[in-house]
Length: 132
Image (tube, rainbow, N blue to C red):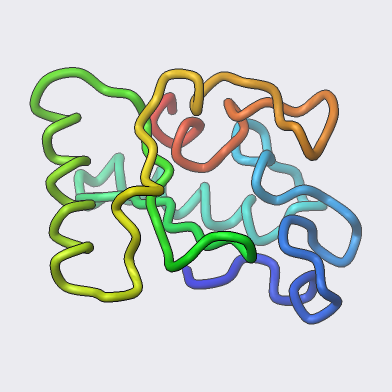
């Protein structure tokens, strides 16, 4: 899904939909107010249950950083190696992918959201889908 909040983006909002809902932090318990996240999470969990979900990536871009990058979960062993390998393959195959801005840290999974008080990164898609 390339853009989950096109209604917000058209109004200049990177993180929120037209209702002001922060879609980046709604994955842990989405409601109908975050309709895109609600339906995408349901689809992802259904695919995972059918063992058809092979990879879930959280591809980001920021106005103040060059290119796109991954914010990934802090995993151990082989799953972590696959995360890093995918990021390296993206960097090798796209001049628009910035490997140096990728992050796979534990802090990136659990810290408070500096833009939305009361929200944490546990509500992000990559953390909530992995935990489900």
